[in-house]
Image 1 (cartoon, rainbow, N blue to C red):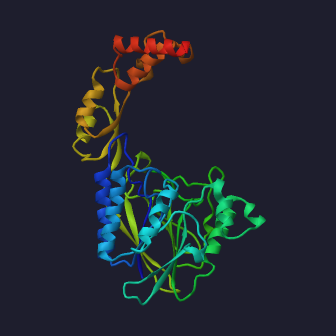
Image 2 (spheres, rainbow, N blue to C red):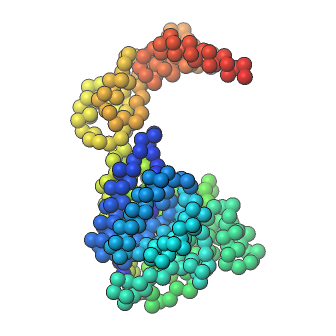
Image 3 (cartoon, helix red, strand yellow):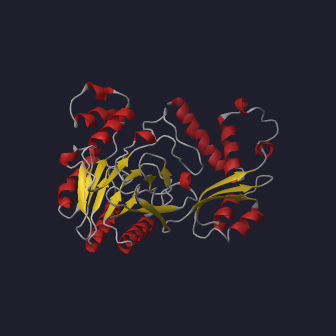
Length: 385
């Protein structure tokens, strides 16, 4: 059987107030096309479908249009809730969508009550069993575990409880079926952000990779947005997000994972790139260097750092003319040029002087007397409040 694993759509998310609905729509169209061309048997969505518990109507329309596209192609889907999704909102749709072979799991269920979803292959010759673990907040881990039965052992640390939930969900899986796990969890040692910094437990709630089940062909994860494979007892991947959602994901290559597996056999994975979203980039340099870069950045959203030797009136406006898609513009120049002579140590500066220094650094020019006067009045009002 073939599966398409995707996750962390965050439909409805904006970038500094800019709508990205066109990008989301294009990315979802790519996902649906890949599913059709790869002739997958099931689409798996590992949580964070929406960016907010109360998504705007435009975001909901994009998701439902995608599901309608799957229906027209005869492709069933399994979706679980992530920490950004509202379980009750998804639960309200679950019963309606179930009859359309779109299986939504907003909360943890016992295996026999829908915690394990059975889906047949296109030719009806094989069956997949998909154990679903939606996001479980640390404060609710006992409630989720109580679904599996009363026991004082559930009062252990978060990672042990999540391991036990997974064990309960996968305990009844048979060798005659293709067995998978779909989960929205954090794994210690996984990589986050643009760099290669690993995520370690202690500051967050998650589990170690070795606590994942060994009796399944594939584990599809959601929660971390960097696409990556996890070294675990079973083949395990974070699919990653659809598009670069913020500058913590800048210049990441996005993808979906196409998984092929048979009963009792090892899964083979194919990473299929997604190219619909606009890239996010940091660019920096002096004015001449920025003018050259302006011809190379295409339609990417940018954070621009302009380096100058001294404050230059109107610099921010010049940079924004060069880069219409600049989300943020920062001006850098030597700190000694940022202050008037004799201003002294930063701890001795008045609020007005600090504000003036900030404006020089941010905009590359002295703030106008009207702006300084407005700051002075606001500061006085705040001080008297």
